[in-house]
Image (cartoon, rainbow, N blue to C red; front, side, top):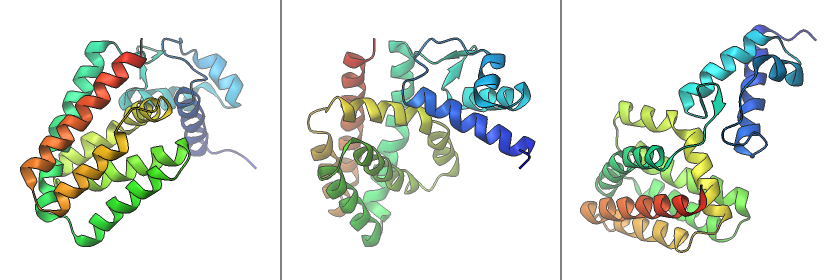
Length: 203
């Protein structure tokens, strides 16, 4: 079956992204289009398009796998804190009981799962809250950071950051109790703790 240019680009994107996320392509590794094209079994054009997309997502920078500096990490988390603290405040005001129940399920899943499912549950927890900001520009900004956020989440889960799930539970409590300022403050503290923990792991 012939691979279309669109499916070749998607294949290249997904394979390169997966290799970065699972650590097979470590931070700082130089990206060589011809080598990747040969490994994946496609031409250089879809690889070039895949690299461009991964650059937009922040996983590749200047033809190298991202190896964020402390300054880079602080800037990225600062953006998340601004958006997600506001989203938590909005969630405490507007989130439906149905979605609050979904937050509870995410917390339960995270308490009773392996690392991969904890990461998935954490992502869903944050995504549900971000949606409540009801600002498409903010939502789109976080969406474009999802690959980077996944890498951070993987780090804090696999290295077992203390109180990670307990902090989610406290945020959910504040949202359920309709305490916007507390929910916002707890989310800000939660992401700050993620940042400081990540900085101790990532060299």
